[in-house]
Every structure is written in structure tokens, then in C-alpha cells.
Length: 260
Length: 278
Image (tube, rainbow over all chains, first blue to last red; front, side, top):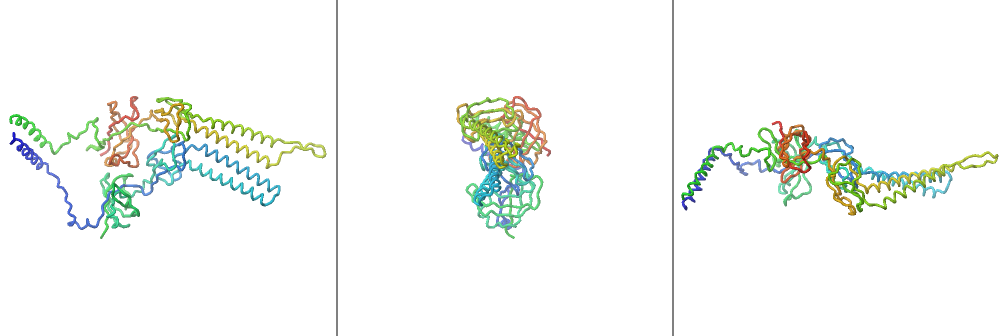
């Protein structure tokens, strides 16, 4: 019984060794820092593919969504309507202010025809100006009930459906210009950040495409962010060319050449 | 002792068999259509496997912009509704009265304008009657007041309409969260509507490793777990932006079935296979 307890592991080991020798094990890569002088002058980090131009859109008003005119993946032009809030109250406000402008203007015309003191006329004119200002304000508020694309691009996320309530600042649509991508690092440590300078060359491995691209550092964040307790700086890499197949959010490994 | 020697035989047999097949352990990993992989993957022949959910092509978490007590709930869960159909009405007597008084104000302003437009007689010294209208400004003033009253009526009507929830599009009422008498707050979801006749399949865990292979139009097989049945469909959309799912970055891929099975409902989970071009 007791001997068996020792024999059993031995047999297993033998079998396992036998297996291992036939399966041609892959060599575990060993990293010897001092033997590779290039490694000393590089900074590595993870990164993500993001559009150069991107925006998260929200309404500056509280309201009920009336129309949502786009869906994920739609191409839009600058100024195109993306979504609207129920405008009837705001439209009525514009009409009301319009009527007030008319009334005030009539008073001015009347006084002019009658001929009155300059003070009376100035006062009536001031009423017109005030009514006009209120009208302009009401028109501006009405315009805020329509969300338009600030630039040409592709709708990436729509988080709104008709009849849903929205709050000011609540992100309802995200969009970006998906013809131009760049890489933003997510975990470049504060220890490495001082060595990274704008203009340094970088290589970018895009995991999803299993390809390596070259680029240059175009920006180093001036303020840090924290990721899981680490202080990190966002470094932006501009790609030398725009490869096919990049998608917003793909992960990358970035290696920046910091020294010569 | 004897007991052990019996056990050793099958143990060794298994181990040696393991050796023989060790270089090609594909049989173990080969997924059946109904297998539930814990993340998406692509097979050597270009089939992408992922998990998915059944969702309506469009749904709305509806709410009111105002606070008030519910007066009537005109629908129950499961009701098919048409765009514009009244679903829930709040009790807003003040807003109803405002509309009434605004209507009266419009009538008053209209009468005033009619009066101002009415020509009155002016007897000239020769005795011939001459008809005159009031000053232009007086009439313009009355017109502006009528415009103003009409705008105020629009406003009152729009305010009243805030207390009525209507269906934004043709669909099915999926949930109703309020009963008459209950007070609702702005931003509270009072009912959910969805286009249940247009259900689609949306992947939850299709990662960036597979997304490069997936294109719209590719055929897909969808296994609906609850029905234990496979359905044919095709990819109609790929999310342009990745979202975080557990520790992975995933892209939502949308599939529509060639024919929607009547038993399929919102929220069912599915395993999907997309035939990509390797």
C-alpha cells in the first residue's frame, strides 16, 4: 500500500515525459533585457483604435424624443438631423413671441405717425427690441430640440428610441469619422511617459488583423488618468497610412521608439 | 494492494491513449451546435461561434415629461398598438382648463379684430355717407393680439398633450408599469413598446478576434435554446464601435432570420454560427 503511493506518481511522470518528448514543445521565449539594447529605448503599452474625429452627442434640453432618424452604421453628412424632441411647446413659444414683436412694432409705428416725444418713441422701440430678443431666444431653444451631426461621419451608437425621455447632457448618439483612425494608449505608465515625445516613431500591432503598422506620436496627454490604481498618460499615435479593416475599439500593442 | 493494481490498468490505458492523440486534440474542442462556449471563437473552416439574444428591431422605454397622477391606462401587456394610439393619460385638470380658457381668449381676440375691421359710418358735410375703418395700427394691434391668443392656445394644447402618452410607432405593448391613481415622475419608465413582429438576433460576446472575418450578408445558423431548434438567417449589421463585455472588447453583430418562428420571444438566448469566407 505504502510503496504504491510512491510508485503511482513515478508512473505518471514517466508517461508525462514520454508525451512531452513526442509533442515537440514550443520554446518559452526568454526576455534578456541587457542582451537587447533596443528594448531599453522603447516604451510599450496597450492601445485602442479610435477615430481622429469623434463625438458623443446629447440634447441640452429635457424632453421626449419624437424621432430618431439614424441607426448604428448610418453614414451622415454635416448638419444632418439625427434625432428630434417633441417641439410643440417650443414652437408655440416662438409663435407667441412673434405676436409680441408684431404688437410692439405696431405701437412704434403708431407713435411715429402721431408724432410724440423722443422718450416715448425710445421706450416703444425698447419694447420691440426686448420682444425681438425673446423671439430670438425662443427660436434658439427650438433649434436645440433638433440634434444634428456636427461633421460628416458614421453613427456608432444610438441610445434613444421615440417616446423616451431625455435629460440635458445624457449621451444619446455617438458618432465618428470612420475614414481616419488613430491609436490611443490605455495603460502607458507615468514611469515611461517622460520619455515619450511628439514625433517619435511607433509600431502598432492590431490583434484583430494580426498586422503591424507604423506611426508617429502625435500627442502626449498633459494630465494623467488612473487605470486600476496605476497613473497613466494617454499617448496618441498617428498612423502613417490608413489600413483597411480597422474598427473603432480594436485593441493594439504599441511600441514607441524613445531613443536613438 | 490488489485493489490498486486493478485501478492502474485503466488509468495507464487512458494515459497512453492520451499520448497517441495528443498532437490533435480537436475532438475535445469540436463544438456541437448546441454547445455553449464561454466566449466567441472561429473554427478552422471559417465558422464564427458566438452567443446572442433575441431583441426587437426597435423598442422604447416610454415616459412622461411631467409629474402627475395616472387617470387611465388604455392598454394591457401584449396589446398590439398603432402609431399615435393613446396608451396612458395623466389626470391634469389644470391643463385642460388652460386649454378651455385659451380657446375663449382666441374667440375674444377674433371678435375684437372683427369689430376693429368693421367699417363705421362717417357723415360728410355734403350728406353722403362715407365708411371708414379704424386706424391701421388699431387693426394691426388686434391682429397681433389674435396671433398671440392662438399661440397661447397652441401652448396650452401642447402642455395638455404632455399628459398623454401615445404609441410612437406600430408595435406591441410589452410592459405597463403603472396603474390609475399612481403618480408618475418625469423620466420614470411607465411602459415599454417593441416591434415584436420584427425580432432580430444580436450577439453579446463576438470579440475583435473574429470580427474581421464577419461581413454583412453572410449566412448564419441561429440555435434558439428555448426552442431547441436551428434557424437560418443572415448578418444585416455590424456595430461600428466596440463595447466592453467582461474583460473583452466585443462588436455587436445583428442577424435576421429568414422566417421568424412564432414561438420566438424577446430575450431568448441563442448560439449563433456565422459562415465567413476564410
